[in-house]
Length: 416
Image 1 (tube, helix red, strand yellow):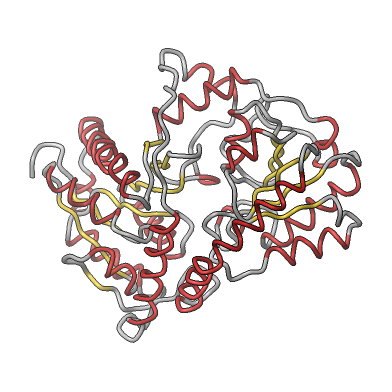
Image 2: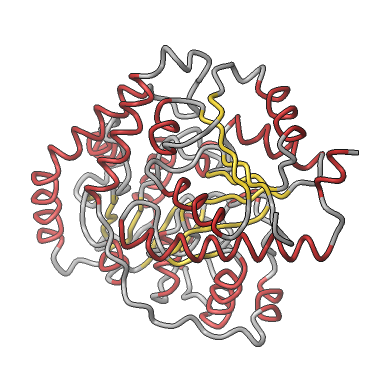
């Protein structure tokens, strides 16, 4: 291998070809790349030489430990750090002084992807002190006003449906696999297919709700994925329905009468939970049926810019609101939940006593994130991957080269 070269082990990534394209780029830089497939969706997205792990989670630690030593792995690449399979990998990597690179949806939206060493979100090593960002940002350039990167719901839906179909179809081969998500692969595929079919009607319904809202002042509650570890691991709620009920109860009791609450469905929701009736039932239960609106579609940026504020568990939609100077209340763990940036009081106080973010701190936060753990692009569109793959290859290669200069090779520790 060339000086500073590494052996990257790829575990589970987002649906689609991103991890395969990233590995191709790393190989061109002189690195070796290995892959473990855990299900048919992993297999169809990789389309190349790989190890197919057919065992259960109980046999995974021994399998992985042997693989790390045999292939002299230096780096592990994965998407989402709280999946049971990935938690095992992070633990073994820590014991062997290997580097784990975690991809996730961007801390800042849109058009950004997170790539952080060790862990993301609640496991991130980012500082919690706003003064630290002011100091770290000294000398860093401001973020340019980049043109938007075209996104494609259709590409996301097709790639997700294909992933879950392949997982279901090849389940007899990968008998030991159990998804970290609560629904089976066939249900996931059916949910995405249903969303594509219902999309035109949902768009029309959302348009009519927005028009009915008119000039009425409103707050925004962006829904998050019920299966996401941002909810299941990094929040006080068992699921999104519990969060909805808590937020609507507070809104009904403490928000002034003229204000409405607009609940926005997550753009990547799989359609398996009927959020509209869940929201309506919660609003009726708390006497706020006439003040709570639900929409499936719409420009989130536009929705947030017109809002009085955003209340969220820990959605990155909060960063859109902060960039627009809007107050944000965070109920879970979020890297952007900083004094001077987000509302630090109770949720009940937020509706009447929230203050605008200190943009100096937030802009310092954004500059530090862009330099340390953000990449321009997206996982699920041609344009997004065209931006993301080269910058991810460069970031991973630079990280490996820096680690090689700073410390003894992890390979030596594994081989010793």
